[in-house]
Length: 202
Length: 269
Image (tube, rainbow over all chains, first blue to last red; front, side, top):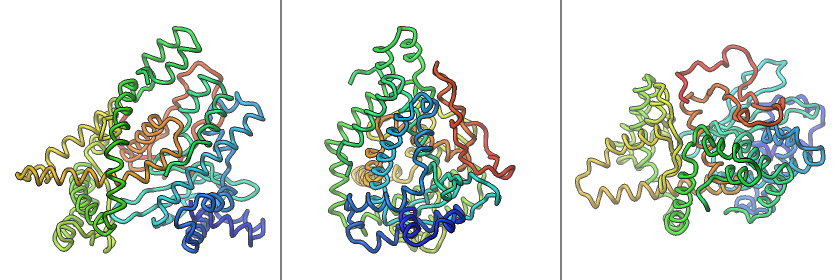
């Protein structure tokens, strides 16, 4: 995550859009992660987990590299089509906020971990790849973190993050399904809003 | 909270009896005892919030990191022993060699496991348990269980945990106060390690019980298949609603041909 953050920032500050689009997905993941970690190392407030700053870091560096609408659609499964365009927009906004909050928390809790990157196994023409990384914590077995990425006109974007086999996106599907079945798409929007307004966990 | 799971209650309020019956009969194929498990989850949360979590937080706040790391390493060394045993049972000799090498090195030079010299020397730590081995042998996971004070498990994984504690080295200590103290510290160590993950879970989940269950089951499946689980049939399909959207199960694997296809193991589900 951290890497994603950092990469994003630098990208927007320095890189031309063309260069962006050409960057290979694994290179992108590594750059963003390294940049984000560097940003945290350079800032005491970020190290202390200042929520405003962490959120800002994520929004500027990481979020542009995620296809939040596709993530929302995946989390919704078949209910995505039951939602109108306005509802889809609202759902994406709320789900994005939830993911940002979750990342902020994870970033704060795991900032001391080391990341390593595995070589990309894909064909040059692929438009959908999985970038594999590992997080190593002292005294623990490494945790694999995989990013499912797709090629878009604005460069590669992640549409799922799979931590130790747990898909961040599809883990929500069964929950979202139930809420939609019980109280409709609007009920889900309401539930997400309520969740996002609840105080953050420490 | 009543004992009926949320989906049943909602459907029950909104819809007809037929649906309610279907829902009560088969809420989730992996979690047939959901009402019971949810009740256990509530019990767990109450006890944990009142006693265990504050103790674990105090442990992290007041005990220096150096000591906590030593404690984690000590118990991690015992974990390595069982990881090695399970790698043998799964026929992964090379990996088991690493695991036993770690135990040997850390137990001797590492002062009984307090120092994880093996990791410093680049011998990677692995994590295996009897539940994973049973899964590789083709034993189904059985119903999901939430056990107060121990957390999420399944019949298969819980059996593995029991086996481990019956034959584990701490059990051979005859001095009961010493043995119980070790169990207590080991428990505290585990609980303290879970604090970060718990915090992320609380931020992420709308329904914590369900989020934890799904994450646990997905993670175990991933471990049984050594990181390459076959695609799961879509759980959505059971419900009587709109046709599936095209974006259902995302390919978790790159779309490169052959080589990527999972080799593994008999179906564990």
